[in-house]
Each structure stands twice: as C-alpha cells, then as structure tokens.
Image (cartoon, rainbow, N blue to C red):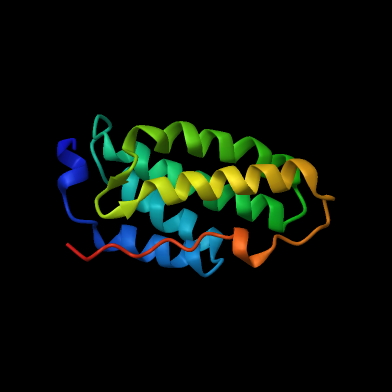
Length: 130
C-alpha cells in the first residue's frame, strides 16, 4: 500500500463520501475540490479525490439531463481511481470502480430520461475518521 493510502481519511473525504451516498452530487464536488486543491500539486492522493469527484460530476450531469456528460466523466473517474484499488485511506475503491462500471452500462443502454435504479447509485462505506 502506498504511503498516502495508509493514512486515515481526512474529515472532508468522509463528508464527501456521505454526500455522494446521499445524492448530494454538487456538494460532493465542492467538498472534494476544496480537499484536493488544499494539497501540494504532487500529492498522489489528489487523484483519489479527483476520481471520486468525477463520479459526483457525472451523476450531477445526468441529473440535469446531460447523459453524455455522465458518459464522459465516469471513464475518467475509473482512470483516476484504478491505481488506488482495492482501498485507499479506508475508502473501498474497488466498490467505487464497480459502481462506475454498472453506471456506465446503464447510461449506455437506458433511455436518456430513465431514472437511475437506486441499487446502481453509490453506497460506499464511510472510512474511519483520521
């Protein structure tokens, strides 16, 4: 496990995951953006936070009727998150990646106006606080 992944989850990461789990996608984006911008540009965990942020942005786009936005953001989330699997800072990254995969299949095959089935939405266990 790389050094940043061995660290405990910062409070803002826990807050963002809770927002992601409760469909507060815009708020999740804002929380994670604040978190990753507070770090040095070479901090590897920035990509973990940006990957989760991309899931929130994709879901936000979809909720505003922009399915193509979701189809563009979720692959980027997968790309950013994959190096952190299976887990980082107590976050089940493998579960996030699986969620992205299910959402991508749904978005690619469902009618643009079809609501996302609840079982496809993120439900990521919150890590223990730092």
